[in-house]
Length: 149
Image (cartoon, rainbow, N blue to C red; front, side, top):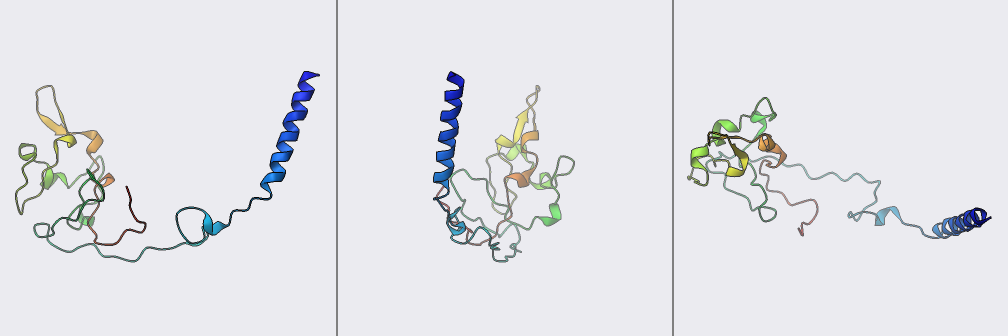
């Protein structure tokens, strides 16, 4: 008997809840962050990567404090970056120059990209091997959405 009453109470609560939901309508243009309909497919404006030489490209401001720096040169000729191939290391793997930025020279990777062996030697960390997971080529374009991070 007790189970039947509980079941009846649950069903009636569910039925009341279903009837109340029918009154709430959410328009598709009020969903999400975009001021347009969720069915629209807005495309960002086309852009070109910078063709400047890395030595004169300069640095764009970071999107937030401690954000990874952007790549100051075209990167497609260095792709793909994966566990078997990483051409970024040819210029940026300089463990002896960590923290020493020289004007006109490639920026050495930070110490966070290395691990110490038992002999005390620095080697590339497997966790930081694929550079393009964090670093992106510089493009001077406005963000699609405002960043308040």
